[in-house]
Length: 422
Ligand code: AMP
Ligand code: GLY
Image (cartoon, rainbow, N blue to C red):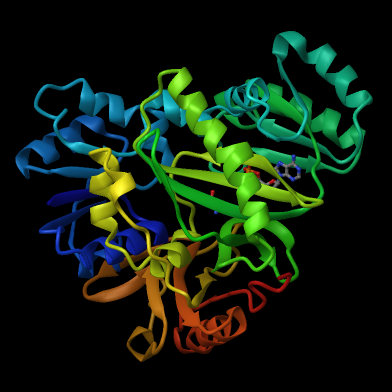
């Protein structure tokens, strides 16, 4: 197969790394890719959101499969774009239809979808400018903390957890006045769930599905889960507290009714569905849906899949997933993100990265890197994810930390406590 992969972060480097191992992968293009993906395939300077350019490239290069990494092109309808063009519709698109991607694209849509199907999630109400007064009154009686969510995509920044009702009311007003632009023209106000989070992924064709290795990510910048939220500072797989009993509930109460629901609303869904879950007591609740793989979860989940990823994707596209096996690597995996100094606030780019050649016993997945005259330089906040295997999570983490010391760039920062709460 000739595969075009969209995206350019650590997730896509892990995708490319795994796809490249497949005998089914004849040719791999990554748009736009990064310095890491350049070593595995051909980087193409295309924006994943420019559907016409992506379509033209797919025609020119006779692409057989389009695998979509990030959510934005999916929420904007890249699947539908391909399916509505006669000479593109034969291409297997790994990623849901625009309708299916609404599970991530609109929090209000996702909440309603769950409520109608009794899928466990936090109680909520949604408001717009027209219902601002009602919303303020609702917050006035709400238990604290109060969770506020911008309805639309807000680059992972649209969720606020307010400790007091006063703060919640101020933020609520700010959101409806455009704090996150159009994304917060509608705001979901929801109950705070107190528990421990984990990430479950399925690869599905909308009916059949395979559950991928379970993971947990660490979003806060500081050790002990303190400070600002980031795109993710590290992750681990498996997650010791996610036992068979909990997974049975996840499957019966969450995965299965979600897929049935997608069928009921007539939303084609071939691709990854990511359940951001929280365990409260011994029961799972949905915090959010994403219509794609997670980052940095992919950097531990894919290394723990022994089966051929391209084969699984093809089976999903051809509706033969039930004939496939997804074999998990019994080892544990941990990834540690090296980030730019200052991130997630202002940071500098263009710092030379050295020591990559000395990395031993870890896989260095590139995220915010680019090649500049043969030199790898930083080009983003999250720079590199170092993934290692181990007999247990501690051993995996230790291996990543050892290599984290070897890779150098000015301002480098990383958390040393990934998996600390497990
Ligand atoms: P999201 O952007 O939906 O992933 O939300 C960001 C983070 O906010 C989640 O990973 C949770 O840590 C937290 N969060 C969101 N909703 C809730 C909730 N209802 N209760 C507790 N924490 C939440
Ligand atoms: N790791 C969470 C996400 O990808 O949204």
